[in-house]
Length: 168
Image (cartoon, rainbow, N blue to C red):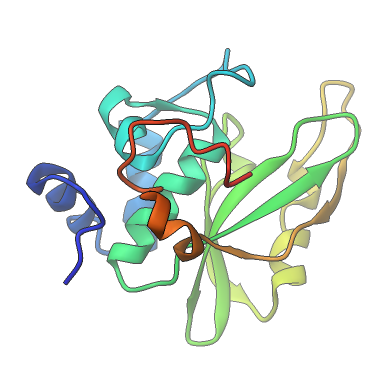
């Protein structure tokens, strides 16, 4: 079994998260949202995010994807695109053929989704009512295809100490 370059302690931390809901709880309680994240400061690997205990939604999605991978899910993320607001990134998982998601956000309405959505569009649309900008406008406008992060394994996306800007 590969450990993706993680130390014993890091591996144990991720292995202890046995369900997607536990991954979400870990993001909610073990990681402070990096409110002041700017473009130079917000694209670290899951290892660095665990070490610092801080991250933006992208880093939360990467950490969630790594934890879900340890559980046996493919490491998938999706970018939710917004108009007049920041994009939001979620980590995906499937259970019994239905989609669910784990995410880091200051807004609890943009976080966890139980795996009850028959397709990705249904899952994304479940974020619509809670995705609004500072003017109160609903701003979710689209979403990317799922990105399987295993394509970045040769670059050690889970354990590198460098920025992982090649993913977004």
